[in-house]
Picture 1 (cartoon, one colour):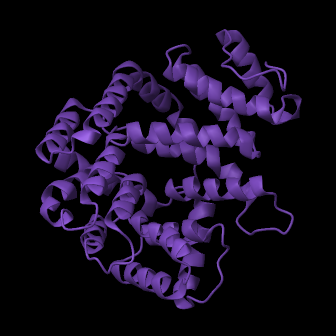
Picture 2 (spheres, helix red, strand yellow):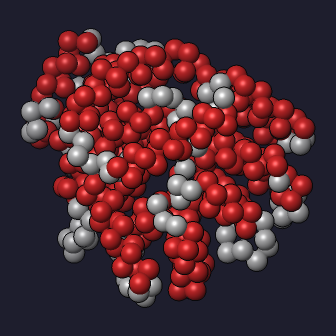
Length: 364
C-alpha cells in the first residue's frame, strides 16, 4: 500500500495479498485503510486487469467490497470502470446479469446517501448522490426508481414544483425511462417553458434521451433536425447512445437512413463524425467495425476514421481476451446478485428483455 503523499503509480499484489485486502475491506469497517488508498485499490485492480497484469476475476472480486463503501473517492473510479464494462457488455447475453451486479453494488449506497439533500452535505456527498442515483435507477434499484418515479409524477402535475437542483436531471431521466409519449412530450414542453437559463435547459433536456421506447427516441432524433427544436441533433444523439441500452445501433441506423437530412443542419460533418465516435465506444464485433468504417468512408468523414478504428480495435481486443472471463464471473456470482436483488421491478426486467430481443433480432 502506498503511503499518502509518496507519489502515484499502479500497485499490484499477488493473489493472496489481494484476498487479504478484500477480507479486511469486506468486514465493513473501512477506516483501517485510508479512503485514498481504497480508491487507488479499485482503480489499480481494474486498470491492471485491462492491462493483462491481473486476472479480471480478482479485480471484479475487489469491487464487491463497495457494498460497504460510502465515500465518493473509491466510487469515482468504480463508476468510470463500470461505464467501460457497460459499453462493452451491451450486446452480451450477460448484460442483464451485469445490471444485477451493479444493482447489488449500489443498493446499499443509495440507502446511505439518500435522495433528500441535507444542509450540511459536502460537495463530495452531493456528487456521489448524483452518480448513485443515475446508476441505481438505470439498473432498477427499487428504492431509486420508486423515489424518482413518484417525484416525477408529482412534477408532471405541478411543473413549478422545485426539484433538487443537483438531482433534477436524474429524476427526470428515471421518470422518462418508462413514460408514455404523452408524458414524454409534456416533459419536453415543461422544461422548455419553465427553464429560462439556456445551459440549465440544455442539461435537463438531455434527460429525454433516457426513454426506453425506441419509437419515442427515433421521433426525438427526427425532431432535432428541425432548426427550431430546443436541443441539437449532436447532443441528443450522443445522449441516446449513452443512456439507451441499444442506443448505439439505433443512432447508427438513424445516421445512415437520415444522412441527407442531417447534412442540412449547421456543422453537420462535425455532428455526424462526433456521433459516430460516440457509437464506436460500444462496437464489439468485426461486422459493426466494417459497417462503421464503410459509413465514414462513404460520407468522406475521414477526420474521424483513425479514431474510430482505434476505438473499435481496442474494444475487440478486450472482447477477445477478457469477455469470457467476465461472463463466467458474472454467471458464477449471479445467484448472489439475484438473492440480494429485491430491487429490480418486473417492469425493469421486462423492459430489458424487450430491448435486448429487439437488438438481437435487428442486428444479428
